Length: 146
Image 1 (cartoon, rainbow, N blue to C red):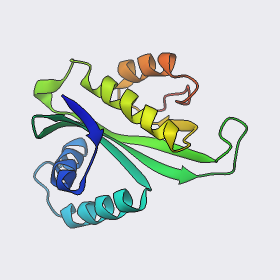
Image 2: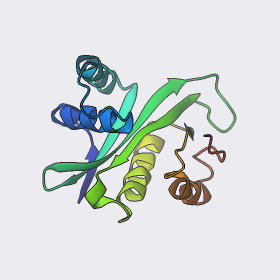
Image 3: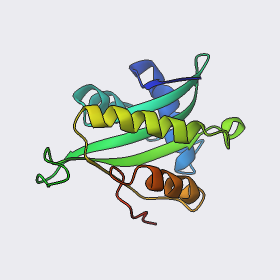
């Protein structure tokens, strides 16, 4: 399993995962907007996307929307990330792939000065995030919002 930053060739899969997460798997009406968003935001650095690649097949992803806030003592750059679109294909779940992917992505975010990460959690994802928060409390804001 290769854990890496997403590239433009991954965007069709990111769009597919986005539709699944929104419970609109067959609705392609927003695909061009999703494609434009991913292309623009990945290119300009306002979105950092990591994927798990199993021999050329993207099986999991996590997106971080980068935002600039007022500098804080625990985040002098003021840069924060909002974690979104965490998805793992059904056949790959419960193997620790998403946790590993998120950990690798967080290590990468630290190198670009991200001091805090916020997230909203589904009920299904809450146990994984609670475990991550206990491991990474200095980085992920310790509250998990519904």
